[in-house]
Image (cartoon, rainbow, N blue to C red):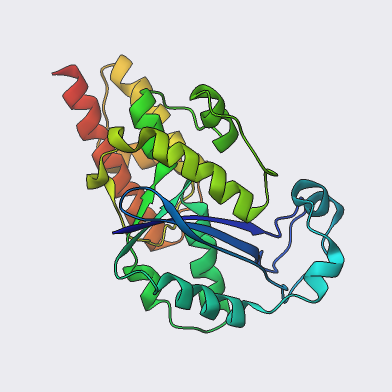
Length: 254
């Protein structure tokens, strides 16, 4: 089993737009079963939209515009990256949070490529693994995790390969504390973290008040005025999340 520590950069922006954000850099480190680094992958990607990087992204990543201008497009780079991944007989993707794989899947679909390979690829969210290990709930950056572990951060934050290298250091340091039963596969989500946090906080309030509501009453009392529930897929997803949080709340009281 090889461990592929993956990081991406994408052309996020501070203003609203119907145009999609795109992956502009992929970086990855391959560790063997002994956690020894055996290979690296790094490539910039020329975006279809917003090919001129805005000031925020240039400052955040340090990616030069002239390098983006001559970079290969997504189809070429993702093909190269897939070939690189397939050098491993078996691999587990390791990410810091769920955004990296999500952005790759979104771009796969935007370019009308088959997403089956990526939906089938197992991955482990090291951020969640680190939080479980430290028994904390607030998200932390890779740099903060390194600091907590007394590991010196090297390289440039927000460059994909450097971030992958730093993430690999965290992975090595806490490997024996990780529960790989939490391996997962990418799944589309129709709700966002703010909406799910709203449900969690509401359940906490109801638990204190000893007044846990059935789903229909909960929607009417807490969600209807705050969340757009027109998408049936989102509604079903939030209902499942509500049910799981109710189970947790009742278990904690037992």
